[in-house]
Image 1 (cartoon, rainbow, N blue to C red):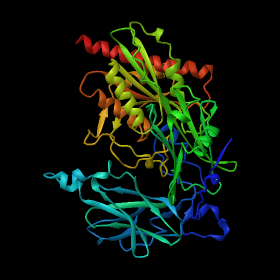
Image 2 (image 1 turned 135 degrees about the vertical axis):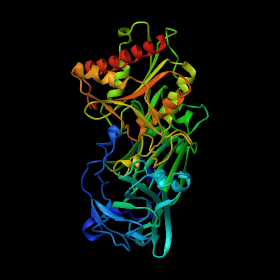
Image 3 (image 1 turned 60 degrees about the vertical axis):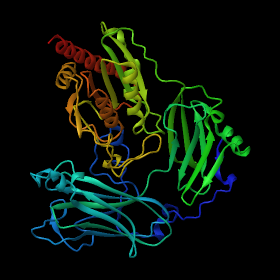
Image 4 (image 1 turned 120 degrees about the vertical axis):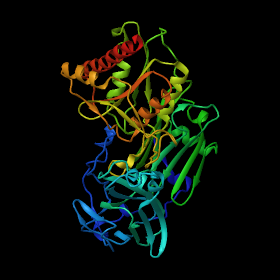
Length: 513
């Protein structure tokens, strides 16, 4: 059963661009029709430098932007203070986008990092402006973001600069990328697209308070939109309908947003915790968005059976929220036979694919249960990647314009821990693990980039949690396996066992010194 949102007098008055006949609307720029980069790269949390979101307006800097300054460079349009004055590097006319939330993404690089400009006072140079992105409606400023040189992590390496904004009505918009004329800069392209965030759930996954209020938010819902809600195999749609009819739940409507609030205890009465709550936003037979959270009755039990060599293993639920495919890390962690290890005890956790939530669950478990070894596993590409560096940054927009987590939340270029170190090294014997796996004919490599998505979020969080002690900890990406069979399970068990065997051997060597 579906909840028809029209039953609650909810009407969308703002026209949506994609609701119109594409033949009758001609917007400037080129539309991307490729699915590459939308979710293929996202399943492994790695970078994808070429994909654009569907329906994005894409402007190549050297051929499709208007500009006041700069010159053509390899793979882009750039400016140098020795040759150019300050001014606009790219001006793009987005046309009439309609109402809603949008994002501008500028692909840019710097020739040198901020710290290399100043020897005596690198902090001053880091705060120098690299470029400014501005959205205008006529002469009026809609949104603006100033990017400092400190934003760039590597020299001569393109990064995504994202500006999010909301817009009402049909007035045409213009996007400008301005350069202050101080340090060399280059841009590859500019893209404008409707924000992907359409559905989210609160509170995030975790232990659910008895008096908690559940909130389901829809951004720019379509006319005739409907919701389907389940916990596990239990359909909660009728339950929510009744609570709304009885006014035990309520709907708040603003111009671009609808918020359904309902007491968690009342809605989840038919469910048994722990449970995975899933909400689908449908328009006819088309599923526009899906969000999912997992709620627990109590924290994970600390069930170590020995006092030394206590090992905490973590894996992830399936991603994205609508996925019916397996997550190889979940199968690897749940299926591992701890009897293969002598004098060791293993505790397992399956984490939600959620910003900060997953990392917080791991950190709190480390504090409560005091494991000696912590290994996080995630789903990656076609091979095993033993990650060596955790970065203090959460930024889904590094991947083809960004994608939300399972709960419907996105982040752009923010630190995981305010004022925390830029990175942490792994404490796993990465090369020894890789050598052992390759000897067992399992393709494996050492990786120095875990992406900036949830895997890196957890990796940095767990390394931050053990920063002040000598515990062994790290993160490993496993191959992506949509359907895990017997042969794949055996391979995953070999990987987990090899990681633990080599880590415990290194730990024993260190303790003997």
